[in-house]
Length: 171
Image 1 (spheres, rainbow, N blue to C red):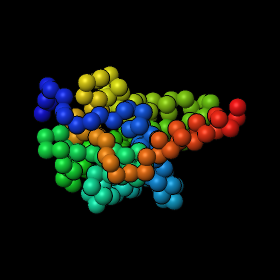
Image 2: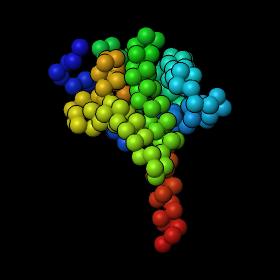
Image 3: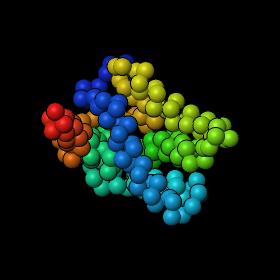
Image 4: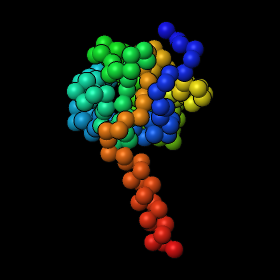
């Protein structure tokens, strides 16, 4: 399952992947706030946003579209099948939902809820400490990669442009 040689796909920076995850998390947070705190409904919403949408949009979720990237299979370089995507997104979705619940419940007297951030940090931290492949745990298990795409909004480039314009304006 693990291939020793790095794939020929262009790698996506980890900070861009994190920003895309945050953009994908916002609709989950908004929709799940309508239904209250129900872990299984949150997971179904996450799977709908990250499996069904990705299958229909050639490997791009809302966050990946905003940052010009897509998910592909490790061996074929194509958009993964539904079962592969579901396996991948259940792993990351459980960690993300636990982290969101931990952040929502934290206060000065209940700092133990910060422990709910650990599964997401461990999952995504693996990509940070793997400079060659940059695969998170959920990517390794599912056999997927996040690669650059020519389709998208290029939000990161637009933000850099806006910041540069703002800096020129402030001088």
